[in-house]
Length: 173
Image 1 (cartoon, helix red, strand yellow):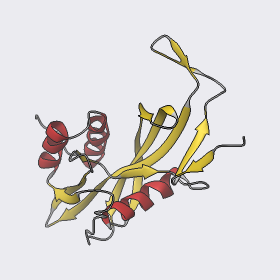
Image 2: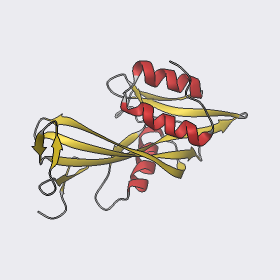
Image 3: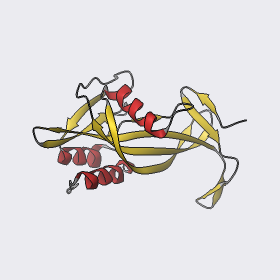
């Protein structure tokens, strides 16, 4: 079967070797790899963080599926640009998040998302409204509050890592 196959732009790899124990069960399903980033800019001496509003009306970080032959870094920059119109440069890796979701055709899929700290090199926000509901720059405090109240739990550790590297504090929700 080789290294995997593509479906709808996603690269799926079979997990038939080295099965993982999850909740006492051995799982040998599919694995999907994505990448994205915490995008920031400096404006008038202040740091701003870019968030997207996804199609489920939740605030999150830009990310997307890795294409065949692409590195995680290239995926992160491409997905940020495609979803938001913003180009950037990677300063450092932040963390990798793992979770599972259900795909109607393939069942449980193990998702691995590589996140990077990305400095915006262009400020022209042009969200891909066919993929997301919108994109907006926030102060670090506002970004933290949005993610806490209207985001996904697995984004909190990612943005905390970014804030540490930027010398910012997450604050209280």
